[in-house]
Image (cartoon, rainbow, N blue to C red; front, side):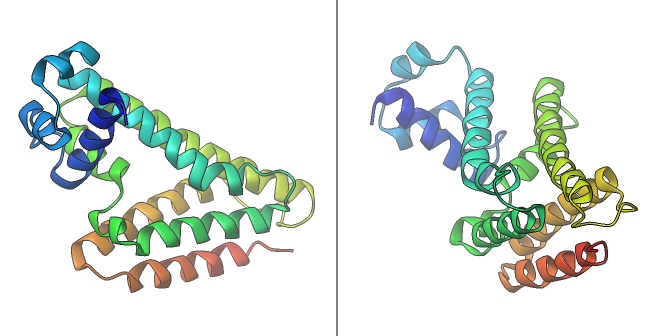
Length: 194
């Protein structure tokens, strides 16, 4: 692994585990086994690194959870929603899920103090919600879901419940919370199936 990728990967793990404010450049270079000058060769500042870590995490999340499920228009919308929940359940119940959602953790930490990062996270959450709402709308158009389904509001609610589930999983160190909450979400969405 090249030093730039090592720094990004290491910083992503440390920020997810300790938080951005409690992760120093010294922590990153020590864990990545690179020099400080090597860090500054690739990144102007810890802030630039934080944005790049966030962008990489977003790419990974889309590739792992969003693309193969919600955006796969070759599948019917109900199957796409179910696949998304399965991906999220797998992530949430994994050992990494015990750390909580990297996006939710970062949002809680920086939203009051770092407006540019807050805006980037807000854009990410909006994009996730819009992708799910589009899937719901396509389900309405194809007759899978009732026309009365409030697609945008339901997508926002589902996203909020996913974040809350991951937060409780992290707090209680109990993976079963993910399964229970996702089943309730499936039942809720089931109320709008034709």
